[in-house]
Length: 226
Image (tube, rainbow, N blue to C red; front, side, top):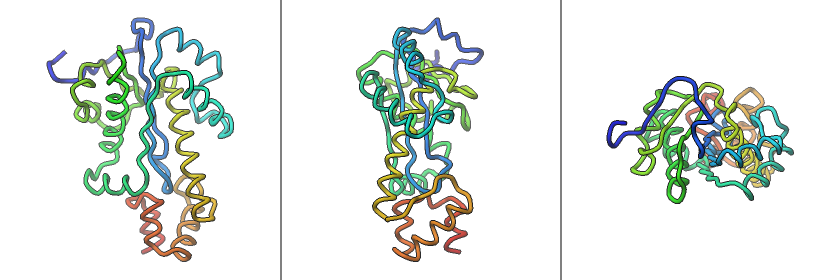
């Protein structure tokens, strides 16, 4: 490994050759409303088997109610970290970074550093996005000593699947809070139904309300406000 740099490997992951694996995943990056949530779950091989026994899998294949149930189980029994970037903070970061993949990498690196502070990590695995060196460049001292892998469909790794559940649960709870605050059921995604909801909120609360609940670089913002 090059001194001072993360050890980014290539080729198939040999899970059995690593005893303490950190999985990282995010939720909210494709949603106009709500936060960006990045989560990480660290387990050894025995704990990974328990995750499978509890029915943990990719959050995209699980209902919201079941996600919230599994979130409580994972949070109570497994080492984890969650970074929630609310819309206002998200917009501040994006205006400075100007690149979603670099913003994602910043969030991933914070999760890695949070868990590495008090735990040994043999391997960190995340879904592949952008250039492979984005996360590496965002890592600090502790994170740079960890082997890092970015894989297509990384949710096949049970720790990443668990992280996807924590991230999705964090996103769901945040969206529920915003919906109650603005007395409007905020839709997920970035389609036409989102445009209609954004226009209604801007009309009722003023366009500045969108600064607090939405990601302003999305095309939806320009479509609604011209």
